[in-house]
Image 1 (cartoon, rainbow, N blue to C red):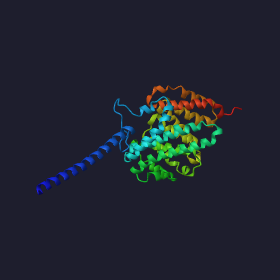
Image 2: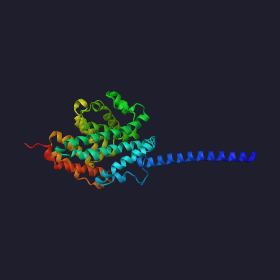
Image 3: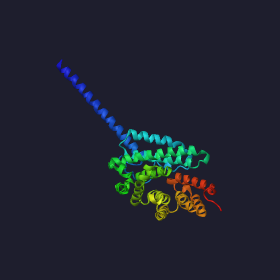
Image 4: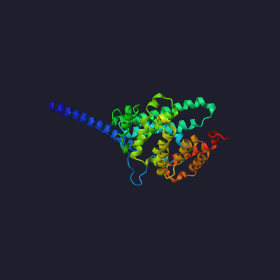
Length: 331
């Protein structure tokens, strides 16, 4: 009888132990699956380091960035953003997913909210103000995803990055490495876009040194990033900001030249920047038209990886050309 009880208890112990190991195994598998899924969908590892493409291996982002119809992206982007936010909640330790969730929020704010709002007429001013507030919300939400990752790596980074002390902000920017350039670009860009929509925001004004320092550091680490995107962002800031807040026309010209060098003149967005940030303030109508026509002359199919951004920039160029008389006074 005692022998049977011992056997029975041994069996119970074995089953209980097996159940524990099974649960642990399933939990481990779930974690592994989420990490693998996170790697694939974010293009970066769990520690946020970008995954280098091997040979002709497909890049999931090509289905997004290679699209020629911006409308389908605008219609699907809200769902995509929410999907990545859910993944970020399920796997908060996967920095690649956190960064991608931030990046997509910024893209949504710009492509789906601010861009349509920019084209609203005066009679829709109230609606435009509301849409700009929505865009700002998504810019700051996207920035938070990325800064939370940076705070994990360097505790206190956000506070230093947003400091009103330019030396502190510059010191924070120096912490990033080349692997952080993509995340830094989106965090800094989100901050500057937010400020551009609400230039009287006291908090934004007091923390403007951080994003500029971060972009300068990113340009130093990876000057050829995304066909000159960092240089283009810097040129917009230096050309548009008042001198008291860091504006520097000579630096703006230099950054524009670097953007043209890196892109080899094949990025329509850089021509649009030149038209809006340089020609329009200077009253240079001819230069404005010439730059926009150069943007429209570029073949969107020449580079599949940037086709979407090319088409979007050309849509903006056409809109600006159609409204050229609104921007220049003819005496």
